[in-house]
Amino acid sequence: MMKKLITLTLFCLLAVLTGAAQEKSFKPFKGKKSEWRGCKRYDFKLQERDVIVVVPHTPLPGNPWVWRPAFFDAFPAIDEALLEAGFHITYYDTTNEWGRPEAIEAGEKFYDLMVNTHGLMPRVTLEGLSRGGFYSLRWGETHPETVACLLLDNPLCDVFELSRNDEWWGDFLQKWHIESATRESFKENATLNLHRLIDHRVPIIALSGGTDTIVSYERNAQIIVEAYERWGIPVKSIVRPHSGHHPHGLDNPAPIVSYLKRLIYPEEQEAERPVRIACVGNSITEGVGTTDASRYAYPAVLQRMLGDGYEVRNFGVSCSTVLRKGTDAGRPFAYIDTEAFRQALAYQPDVVVLKLGGNDSKPDNWAHREEFVRDYQELVDAFKFLPSLPKIYLCLPAKADTVDASKVWGINERIIRDEITPLVARIAHDNRLTTINLHNAYAGEENACYHDHIHPNNRGAELLAKAIYKVLRGFDN
Figure (cartoon, rainbow, N blue to C red):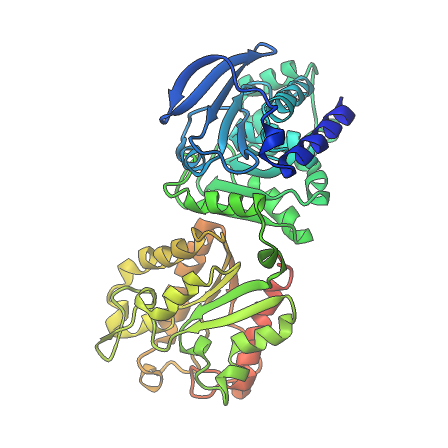
């Protein structure tokens, strides 16, 4: 069956490439007609399972499409945006089949119908919400050559999560026609077969709720993220802080639409460009204290360490703060209001290294401490939802070499250590972001690393770059 499917898929790909004349031979959709979000909707049955197809007003070239294997019209913001952009939205109901072989075989017939009868693109985006995530992974692991992207939203990845619910576990065993299952005996668990996706470099976008107790990030999506990153395979992960299993989706789905379009229609210059790294921060990032910031500020040193294939840009602003109400000598200095911030967003980085917080410890600024987490989250979100969907690292602020704040323009090391650093770590956890500990970057070498008790000299800046490089060096997608 799959040999025939692959042959037909290749035929269909040639059909797309040869233009509209060839596409005219594909059959129009049939079934019960209605509308969904103002577009034509068709409902029919295939192998006793419900099928829904929604046709965009203006389909994109080649007819890209989204396939939901469960929960049509649930939290539809992303689907609405993709439909508006020109994607077909489809549904083939395997909701309660837990990715069993019969459901995968039925999916082959659905895929064949969509691609080889109706002319949709040979590579499909599977959108798996909750248990639909397990089917999407199973499909991708068995038919990776058919997948443009797996869009997984609070996905069930480890089927043994079901064992915590007797009803779900019993239904899983029944649908799979087995009496029992253990991690050793059940080899089709999606989390055991990620190598099939990795070997084919199947892109994944994982959306997760930070407080999901039904399919937690740590026991599900995180397994995928860590496996992909071990091999440097593209994976985009967005964790919604303080969000549970519901709601799914995003309030602003535009970054998902933009990213999927770039996957489906890659531009040659984009494929060849280096990995873009934005170093966002204050005067330490800018390079104050070094003999030549263009050569010795830590972003410049990091560039030399990473070498070809990377482009590191310095978006540091002296005196800048996380706090929107942050000032220096009475002048407003919130980083989010700076031109450097706007330039960093326009850069569309693949990686963001965010190092702010030291200036927030000044007395006039820390008077607004209750707003620090909110304002820091706003900065994180500004980068998190860029079309480039960058990977973000949060730096724990660098250490001041004195407890006398008068020597460092009011910067308070005790507040940095005991109050700001724990808050940055908390924000990182809520968003499931990696921290880079710059607070101890000079440990054992303090007497050789400072220019003026707070800004590093050339040696100190190099140690900051080394600390960042040590964390970043495994990331190259």
